[in-house]
Amino acid sequence: MTVVVTDGFSGMGFEFVKQQADRIKARGIEIFSIGITKRMNDEELTALSSDPVKNHLLRLTDSRAVKGIVNHIVKVICQ
Image 1: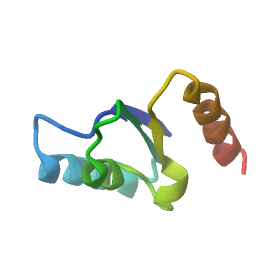
Image 2 (image 1 turned 90 degrees about the vertical axis):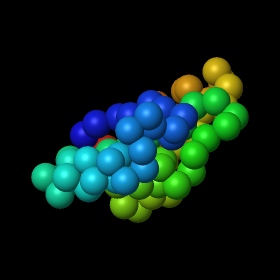
Image 3 (image 1 turned 90 degrees about the horizontal axis):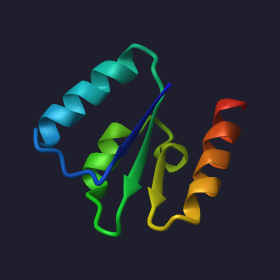
């Protein structure tokens, strides 16, 4: 499992990020992407996230959300 914390605006570009994420996922590594700030690139965050995306793409827009995100990741891992 890996956790990526990002705003989704890679300096390397969307295609590079998607290719690398696909390579990692193909090796059976589960990827959680945590979008930070109020301005996020949903397309890139979706490409990073494992399926189902709704369980692996999380948004952190304020400090109160940290506990909820940690609890969610633990719950998904333990299923």
